Length: 520
Image (cartoon, rainbow, N blue to C red; front, top):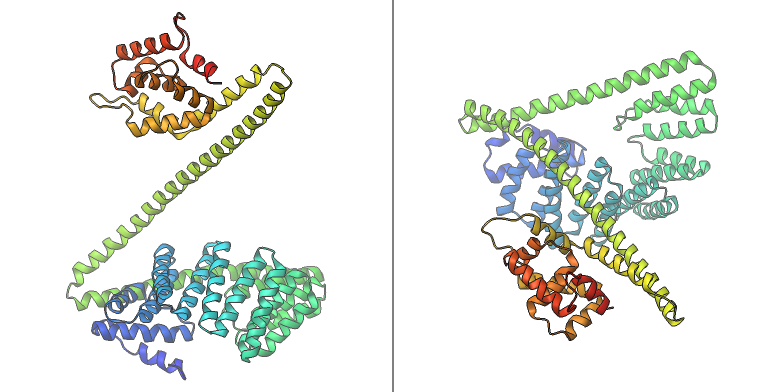
């Protein structure tokens, strides 16, 4: 596997029915297969197989084996575009690796999580995971992977137009890989440097880096040739652009290079005035683009067929061929329905969360605005009072603003809702904790009222004090009765007694207005 991975891969594939192996041998086969496939840039095994292997390693393997198998399982989920299970597999493996101080595997897990965020377009999360990967590789003394993690950080920074930071990270990666004398690695980093210099507008340095990459990395040169062609096209050096465009016809692992080559050729010939060639390139571009789409669909079909064969072997081994095929079909349908249902529910949940968050932010902003306005009015009122001028207008506005803050509070809304939803044969009065919360809320908004109520110079009873505080909620008589846990007649009597103590001889006077006058 180390010296000749191609032969190892062939040997492992020659085991025609690995599912017939016992659990230990099957788990070992999965581990060796994935390690070899990783070296050769081949696909991981199917999730069904890796999940079975992971179950065995969880019971009998080491923490490092579990972490690696969790990483392979996550990559297999990503191949199937099942991002939620992939994230769970990565997260479980990462937690274990971090707990057991397995820094090297933790670094690889972070790198593949970053690739997952690349796929989903979450750029800030992608950079965060590359930064974590770099730190873990540094702790594991894996200098090569550390350099490539820095390259990942630089790439995300360049997409966010943080080109100076991106260049700094890429130069760090270049210095590390140069010390290791890894020619292929130096070539790949040089390619990244070339792209950054291109974005910065430093054409000469960009060219130098691309040529350096071509000299050192002979594995996949087509994307670099295409980048050089684009540079020369931007300088209107059309002959050089055509020359390197022709070089970009080499085989490549990047499926989009051949498509982009035709597109760039169209622009080169269009600028060169050769309309016939430009149209030919454009037609080839459209044809290649459609062909790539069809090819990707065909790969998916082949992959689906292979997956079915694997499942069929498992079913045959258990002696339940007919029943299991039906069960498999039903499972796929249920899974699809669950996925659709989950996505719909998750979308609804996210919309609800976004609405709640927006509402809370608006409410917080309104609270801040009200508090700021109250402070302004208070300062202005102090100045007026010092000058012995009338401050009644300021007092009225401050009181109105404090009442608005009260209405914005969650407790106020809860109590009003409680009054609206009357349930027969159910006690809905406020308990002691709710009374304390209400009193604290009103005291915080009307501090002078707090002093007045505590002094209680009018000899108010406990129930009459509650009536005073409820007056701030502007409740109807029956609503007040609900919160006190009494009948409307009793609530009316309590109101009358409270009014007589607060403002004797003033029939029908407003309790709240009197409290505000006394407590200012």
